[in-house]
Length: 189
Image 1 (cartoon, helix red, strand yellow):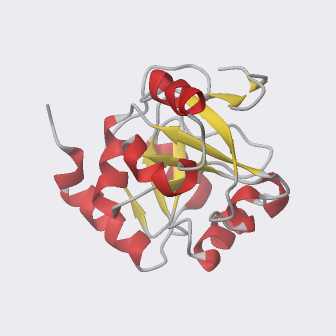
Image 2 (cartoon, rainbow, N blue to C red; image 1 turned 60 degrees about the vertical axis):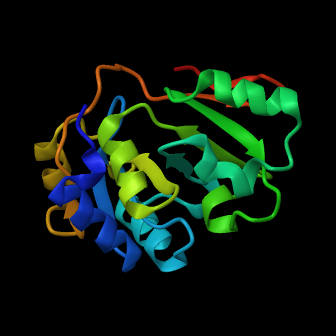
């Protein structure tokens, strides 16, 4: 199995994110835009590129559940098991924010959207970066998400600091979003 975190283009993209850059990378169904979630200026750059209001919030993806430990330590055993049983995979969970995730990630919500990705490139980028990364669809508001590198370039041209290698996964729909506390499906997958 290829360790995508060692790929030169993934390494370059991770370095760009560490320096405040915005990058594009493939996920399970579409290309995503990512950055360091704790770099407020970088997150606002993504929001400006997409013409997306901060109130909507964005998803964080990680290569493994351990990367989310600071954000899930307060969960009970049943809640933690629910996360473990669905990851890695196309399941995004809305987890109560324990105060460690900034408003530019959560938006107007009291929860944070978390997913351990099953996509090898997205996971490799998270590993190369060293933690969770922002994941929001790669498209300006009102246009369909990019499903190939040509659409990424058409949408954002030179507005990105890096574009990784790779292709989107075989899913036809974005990840399911479900509330961890209620089990309610917010967005079907």
